[in-house]
Length: 193
Image 1 (cartoon, rainbow, N blue to C red):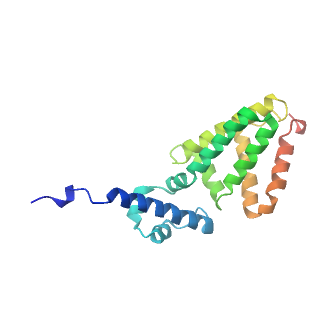
Image 2 (cartoon, rainbow, N blue to C red; image 1 turned 45 degrees about the horizontal axis):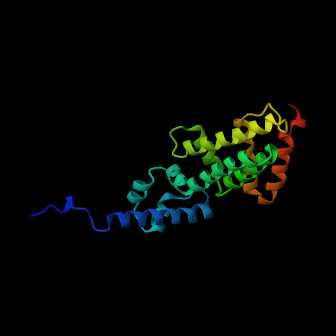
Image 3 (spheres, rainbow, N blue to C red; image 1 turned 60 degrees about the vertical axis):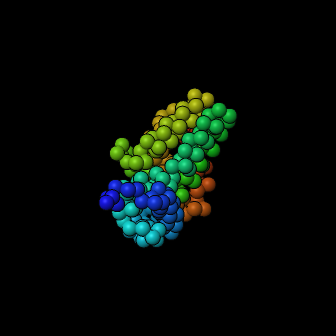
């Protein structure tokens, strides 16, 4: 007589992958409708799985966000590499800031989650957020070296500005471009260095 519990289930990996994809799809829809604070229980229910399955794949809300946002955050990193290599320093920073603000507005409440993850080394999003911050710091430094951006702003202050603009624009999207323009004007080297 064989012990059935020691035999792998047929289709186990396929089932797990399908559940993973359904959870991501349900989370994407829930976050789009309710923001990043959407109920994880509702996400599991919408995906047709139990909470245990949700937490097996995504032990924390940040892990779920990392799975959803990882590609777009890595895209922001790729974009920063392209801008470092190709564009004039000021235009490169301006383009990157617009992309960073747009990304932070992906879901309502995401700004707070990103800021919290950047400050928390235990967060599942921390390493990716830190890499994005480092990329932004390189673009900032390059623009400062070119003399187009004031020197008394560091990467932490820059990220506070990004968070502030994204937070305000999340509530009033039509203010995004004017707020970005004001931020860039304030960062300009003529604004007091």
